[in-house]
Amino acid sequence: YWPGPGKFSRTDYVASSIQRGRDMGLPSYSQALLAFGLDIPRNWSDLNPNVDP
Image (tube, rainbow, N blue to C red; front, side):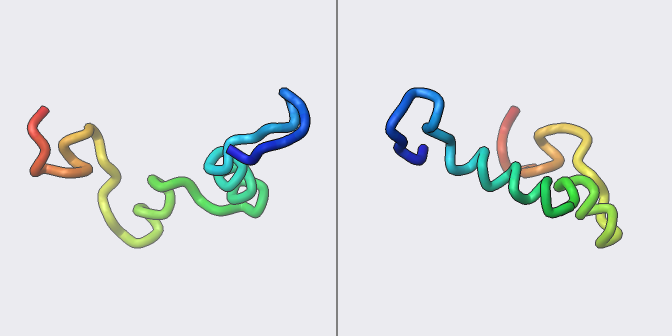
């Protein structure tokens, strides 16, 4: 997180980066895959078929 002076001023760096991306209009992971003509994952094994469920 980013340290801050008070309890409510501290923020999570990754969450802040994701929010900035949304504010700038970046597509979601699934939307980006579709834009490149790729299939969207339907379950966890679609993301990495080498991982046992």
